[in-house]
Image 1 (cartoon, rainbow, N blue to C red):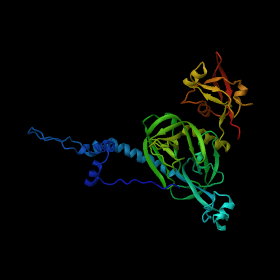
Image 2: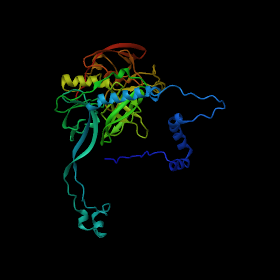
Image 3: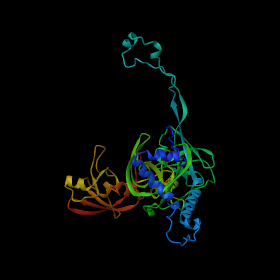
Image 4: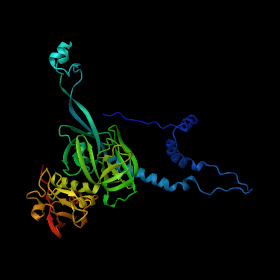
Length: 419
């Protein structure tokens, strides 16, 4: 596990101020931007040349800062509402014992040369091997049913050789079973054997707006359970490629937030000011500060319903491979439109999969799918994301450009085949 990095923030002393003055102008500029906001209320006005007395406004600190206090109370109430249902997940696994392995300083040489240069036999003895149970990681999750159904990220519980332990907010410990992992998005559902557990309230991520408050809760760094951070929604419907734990996955339609999301926060809830879950914290941008991403909760609701009714996550399936059309691609390949999904095969397989809903509906290679259910396909709304919003068995109108024709084809979506 990586060591935690801490920065101490102390009081502002005269000595510290002197050291600050010796620092670079860029650092001072950032400091003054924060400092002035905090000291502005303490600036004493210049003496008046008049003999009149200045009468302060008849306001109390409570009145002056009431909106801020209301906001603070709302954040606290939201956290109190959701925090009892937020859990920490630890990952344990049998790992090799490699300590006390003999070191061969001549390992890069052939054996006969090793002996010639004085390598003694113990250098060549094999390592003593064995395994021991070790904590290899951690994540977060939240309880959605009183009988122990928990939502988390797929990458948190993706190792089939590992075991998972859930710690609830009251300190109790439970062994967890992985019920289902979404084949398309970074989402999984796990189960613990318990009754009468607190649960979260699921909100409406389609109603989320830029700039609204976002509250993240999770097991930061795998050490600090139920860590709370507050920010805003910084972006909507982002598409990012996330990597970690040996997995690389492109995630479409995610919410961006500047609420601090740290290692170990994965799978925890992103809340609105009502304490409702609007997202599932899933990734952060490397090399950036406070650029985090969360799966919208509405995308997870379908998976939750599927697990409750079928015991597994069934996702809708169209059955095409495609390239997202951009103005640059359209110009380079002389396409008739500058948006959509160009149905085209690749090394991984054919453009239209045999016996798929797309094949049965008559979609062809080199068709350009323009819309799904009236929603236009573009970089912020890729074909996969629009299909994922649908349900298994649903009939959906697909608008297609084929040569000089524009067609509307009805496709009946089926469940994605098992891998």
